[in-house]
Image 1 (cartoon, one colour):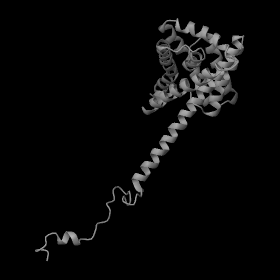
Image 2 (tube, rainbow, N blue to C red; image 1 turned 135 degrees about the vertical axis):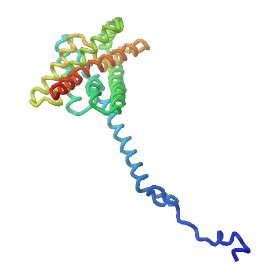
Image 3 (tube, helix red, strand yellow; image 1 turned 90 degrees about the horizontal axis):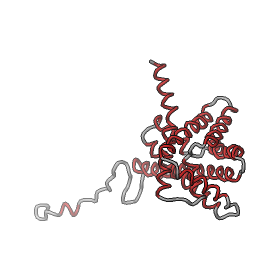
Image 4 (tube, rainbow, N blue to C red; image 1 turned 180 degrees about the vertical axis):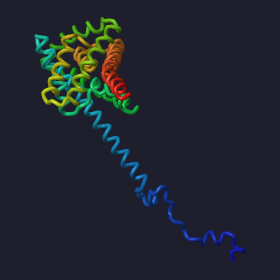
Length: 256
């Protein structure tokens, strides 16, 4: 029979079961399990984690923005510097993300951490800008004039000056953040925040996230402003890694 009809066996052959690839189950039935299911689950969890992290970065920017509002609202610079501490206090207490705090650990983490730090920078920008432009729509919008005067001084400064002031700023910020993280004394955690923030403001050092708020509330954004902000951010990054790198060198020397 098969010799007379060469396609007989093919026609009569029972249908094969659907092919299973890497444990994905019955593809015709739309089932997903095994490796592919785990892949999809992990992908969804990763996206949720990134979204939560970005939200924490936005909230970190909001906290710094509120700190900037109270600073601009105080006639006395010392008083304003003290109350600005609320921003970093809230960030450390609630676990929000702040670029100037996270960047100090970049050499202690895998390469992917760099992408995380950049996303924190963007989230901080979104949060500070939201606060800045929201304030402009309120009855306290008058603080924008004070912010504009501050921004004029910053934008007329030289890039070298801004870079150096940014380096000094984040040396202090790392002391504050790392002290809150590792200081064994509860009082020491909060004293570090108070001293780090107050000193950098009174010294006139440059904090890129705080300046994101000042540029927004003063509405002075331009290509020049973005360029200056990037220089401040690089300066903050360089200042933030000085103590961690020195600490690593010291530990290696002691271990040798």
